[in-house]
Amino acid sequence: MGLYATAGAKLYIGSTKNQKNDDFVEADFDAENWTEIANLENLGSLGDTAEAVNFNPIGSKRQKTLKGTRSAGTMEVVCGIDNDDAGQVAAIAAEKSDHDFAFRLVLNDAPATGIKPTPSERIFIAKVMSASEAFDEANSVMKLNISLGVNSNVVRIAAATGD
View 1 (cartoon, rainbow, N blue to C red):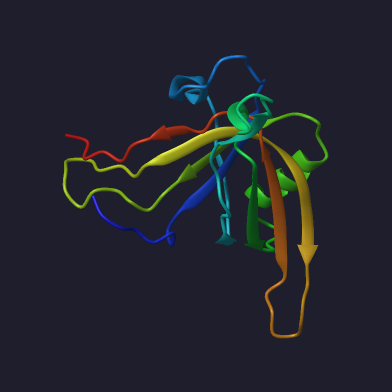
View 2: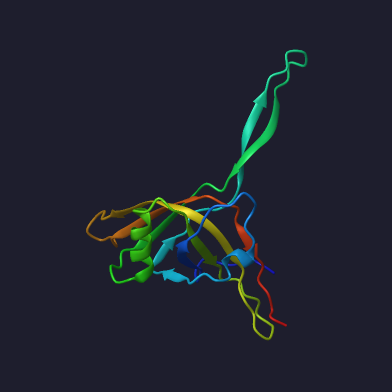
C-alpha cells in the first residue's frame, strides 16, 4: 500500500445498536442503513487504549503494570454546520438519546488496481455525547462539534482490489 490523505474519507451514522459482551464483527453491521454525515473538517482519533493496573510489590521495589479494561476513547468530529444534512440532523437527534448508534468510517485508500477496488473501513458503536455548535469569528465557518463516546471494539475492514 502506501500513504493516504484523510481527504475523501466519509463518516456515516446508522441506527441504535445494543452493546454485547463479545467483540463486534463485520457481519453484525450487515443490515445497517447508513446516512452520511456531510461537510466533515476533522475526524479526530479512534482506537483502543488499555487502562493501566498498577501493583506495588514490597519485595521487589519495582512497580508492576498490567493491562486492564480497554477503551476506544472519544472521537471528536468537526463539521461545517448544514441544517439540511440528514447525517448532521441524525447525529443531533442521537445526542438526545441514551442509546448507542452504529458508525462507519470509510477511508480514502482504495487500491488503484483491481476489478472493483474498495477502501478500508472502521465500524463501531458509540454514544453521541455532545453535538455543540461553534460560531467563532467573522471569517469562520460555523461548526458542529460531535463527540462520539466509543463503546465497542473498532472493526477494521481492509481495502481490497475486488478481484
